[in-house]
Image (cartoon, rainbow, N blue to C red):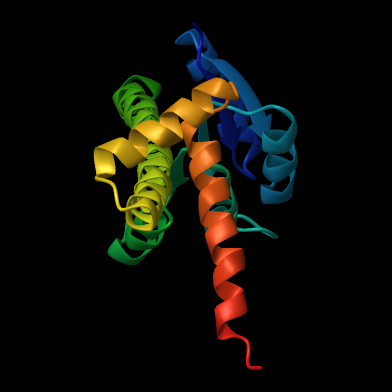
Length: 197
């Protein structure tokens, strides 16, 4: 599948020559001349990677990078400057790579491909983290509910879990839903014990 890149630079020559070189290399390339235009384009047409000039009038590349980071859009920075301060600013915003002008397309492609692969790896890790967090949340809710049933009915935890699971099956619902209702009901009942007479 062809990867879609958004090239952002206030230099029309860079947009034309580097953009053409990237298209010739097999990428779909969108271009934007300002940071504001880049933000609008990303909202409409989510690219696989943004190649973003750091120093632009108006919304700077660092500001755009910060915004794109919040959206989960990967960025490679582009600049005529390779001083440590500029490089550090780009890396702090989560840039996956850094290209120095003038650009040699053939030399830029390994950086772009590495950034695309790293972005893909990061997305997979975030998806895995999300699944693990949901599983942990479910485990915690069910664990608390099992503890409540176990204590209230003076039965072991396995039997308490079996009761919750059987109830979920009989109602054709998820165990977590039943467990959540047990926690909510317990919380509601416990509120009566804290009020003063």
